[in-house]
Length: 204
Image 1 (cartoon, rainbow, N blue to C red):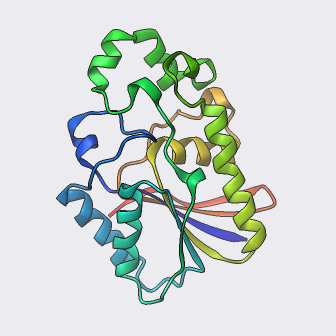
Image 2: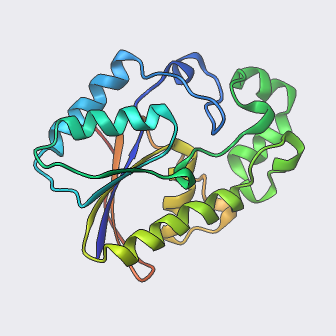
């Protein structure tokens, strides 16, 4: 089986400010995000990854670098566009509290019923499209590295949608359980659509 080490990036300034932190905005990691990521890197330092993949957004690239700087084995790093966070259109970079107040029903669907979320209304990306592009990455990598150890650094919504889909959750239920914490690790074994989870959202 391919063993995937899924990491959500470290906590950023946008996270700390309560802003939507989607696929069209970026901000640097704050000190606590850097330190938490370094602790994860220390935990993984002896693990020989066959490949490391990261979202093109700098918060994910920084997180990957912090982890691999601690690692004892040189690892090839590739930037993968399809690991970019869900594009939130008009909401990206805006205060979550303000959008929640202005669009209560849309936020309810966004958070509770992804199958009913009208992404086009806000020039955003749909959950279905997010899942399609992220699962494609997993299938391609598992075909290329059927016995590999793969580090993937990405984002909260993408990882939540992707991992719950891989577990077999329908679209309506992919947000149940919430988003993984920043600088958290999920270890998942994957082969031919079969999934076995070793760790889920572990923090350091």
